[in-house]
Each structure stands twice: as structure tokens, then as C-alpha cells.
Image (cartoon, rainbow over all chains, first blue to last red; front, side, top):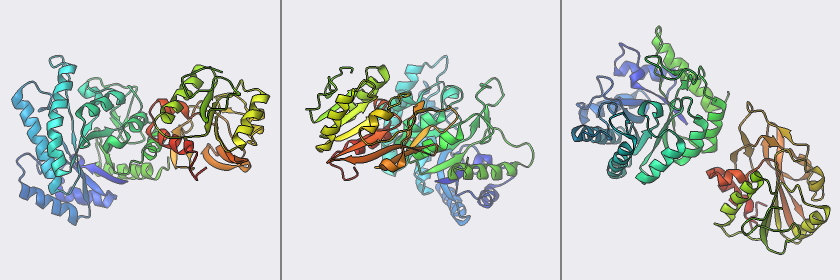
Length: 279
Length: 189
């Protein structure tokens, strides 16, 4: 396995190049790029710019683990408004194009936002339809679409069995799950999601979760690896069980208030322990 | 013994069928039997008997079972949680230790090394087996908990933690492992 972390976690004030150097010095193998999050990687970023970024990444000795986006929360494939849905399809297609330019085989999306206005079944059907279409583009580019399990935030696909049924309905080997072990909160167990998702896992997000807290207001439930309630030994064993051997990508919500670069180093060490199984 | 759909044996001494399952009547054992059936039903296996629990197997039935195995059949004996099967298994040359309960805080997985490297969830109770009585197949918490040995022309495989319920629960790795275990023609036996 290899370890990575998002460019959205580069400490404030660092530009892209300096952020990459920080990751390299902390021992990461790769970087997760977030479309729409940092100024260097937006929908307006051209292919030439992306190629330049790729050269910087490669010259630093890193790879791109996957291409994520922070745009799905505003433009989702489940949106009723056709313009919003089209915008979502467009930015996902852009992720696929960019992934190819970056020599990377996976993207992350958040598919489906259930709200009081937009009910579950409607969201479900619209997501399946949209993903069936996007699967064709993904197949041509040989890039896998990883649908993230943001269960509580999306109010959608709340169990691994449900998620598997969803993927079965989409019915494409190019659409799988980008499994976040922190997003399961108190509604389940990450190791069971890993066991049940197995070969459908395109990539994994690593973070810890304070299960007892629940998400109330602005109070975050997410914390650094080993500080929360995840059963990391079970998670590591489940990773071995399903023979997952791809990227472990750290994703933190809560950031260090002081010495923010220290979080990058601490997280790298924690990922090393997870990979080595010394827990 | 609980009667179940084919290829379940209905009587402990009815080993005329080349392939079959003999399960205790409790729900977990029956669930395990259905798990094995789901694997057996999709593949070509022959001359394999699966015993689940074996609580009600008499001494006479055990002798008959041993003779059946010695003639060239494979036997998989799956220990039921909490059932001390030392005396029964001794008939087949397998020396088990008393079962022990497993704390929820210990490792969740049994590690199989043979016939295929696999992690499978453990059950609440595990029956260890003495290493020296055969070839080790799996370990948990430092104990050997599964073994295989020859009996005449046949083979006996003892599993100290249930596998069948995982097969019914569609555990991918467990199902692959079970197919390996059940392949009576396989040289891995």
C-alpha cells in the first residue's frame, strides 16, 4: 500500500510546490488533488496547467493517488435542477480528464444529497442513471469513479449492504466505492464496510471519528488517526482480509491550530503504523 | 440430527451418499449447514462429509464415520461454539483442547495459512487443537485451531471456529477458502 494526503490540507500560506515538498519530506508517496478547493486546481485550470502540476508532482518524487472534488456539495448529480446536475456531470468528467493527464486511475465523488425537498428514492434513481452514463466516460479513460460514503452528511446509502446494492444497480466495473473509514460514525463499523465492499474499493480515506459525539452544529466528529473510536486493528486486518493494496489517503477535517505542518508529519507516521500493522 | 435439504444426511449412520452434511439441530448449526450447501451447490465436489457440531453423534456412528473416511472420503468437522468434542474427535485421531470463550476486545479474525492465506471472522468460542496431531491450517491468539490429517485413504479436517455461517453471510474470502477446503480431489488435502 501507499500513503497520500490531500492538497486541501496543505498548511495556509504554502503554495502548491511548497506543499508537495512538505509531503515528500514527511514520507508520503502521493497527493490527492481536490478540484475546486485550492486556487491552483479549479474548473478553469487548463490542461497545460495540469500538465505543469503533474511535472511538479513527479519532480518532487510523488504520484497522484486520486482526484477528488469539493464541488459535489453545491452541484450534485442528484440535483433536481438540470443545470446543477449538468454542472455536476461536467466537473466529474473534468476529474476523469484530469486524472488521465495525471497518470492516475481513480477519482472521488459524492453522489446523492438527500434533503427534505429532494427525497431518497428520487436521489437514488437519479444517481444510478447519471453514474451509468458517466461509467462510459470512465471506461474509455480507464479511470475508476469512487463514490464516497459520506453517509451522515448525505443522508444516503447508510449501510454497506445498501451501498453494494447501489453499485449493483449501476452495474459497471468502473464505478466503485471510495471508502472513508471515518464517515461511518456510530451507525456501523468500518471494518465491516471494508469486508463487504472488498473488490469494489477504489481508494480509501483514513481518519478517526468520535462516535459518541454525533454531528451537532459546528462541532466536528472527525479527528486524527488513533484519537477516535475506530477499531484500527480490526480495520487493518479487514484491509488484509480483502487484499486491498492500493492507496491509503489521509483526510482530516479538524486541523492543528498551531504548527499545522506537524499534522502532516504526525499523520504520515500514523499511516505508517496502520500499513505496518503495528497497532 | 436436524433434517435439512439435500445433500443433508438424515441419520448419523447414513453415509452411503458420497457427499453430505450432518448438522446439529440448533439454529446456528443449521445456518452453518446452509452456508456449506450454498458452496457445495455451485461446484463439483465429491466424497466429502461435513459434520457441524456433532453433539449427538453416538460412538457407533463415529466408528462408522471413521470407516467411511478410511475408505477414501474427506471429512470436515466444524466445532460448534462451546461444545467440547475431545472424546469424539479422539476417535478420528484429532486431539482438541477445551473450547475457550473469546473476548470482544481481542482480534476479530482467525488466520488461515492453509490451503489458502485467508482471514475469517472468529466466533465467540474457539476450540484449539494440538499441533502435533496433523498439519496446521489456522491460528488464533497463538493457538492452532484447525488441522488436517490422514485417516486410512481419507482425510479429516478439523475447524475449531465455525466457517459455515460466514458462507451464508456471503463473506467472499470465506467462500473461496471453503471451496479450497471442500475440493476433495485437491492435492492440498
